[in-house]
Image (cartoon, rainbow, N blue to C red; front, side, top):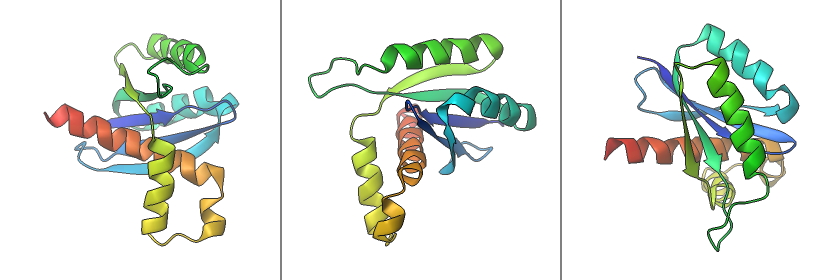
Length: 138
């Protein structure tokens, strides 16, 4: 089988998570500068089989789209055009950063490591991916 990637897209940094080839477990992969995300994805997809990419879709509490949504949609469209065989999807990412910090606390990660934004981004991407896998099961 092939892997599923999750993207927690940000203006400066983007967290990336990936499944195992059997698409059972989501795990953090990396955090990249958003300006290098396209290059990173091209290189990663050339080495690994990827069947789907799920982008976190940020919404406000009142259910309106966050300001960054058009940028995310445009980037997703660009990647979809470059890799037409890869399914592109979106998942509501509300509370993922908060859940990422909470999971880091419960895992005993030191406060100074929790302050590293890149760590939060890749954990948030992992949460997006885990949520996506749960939805696919049902």
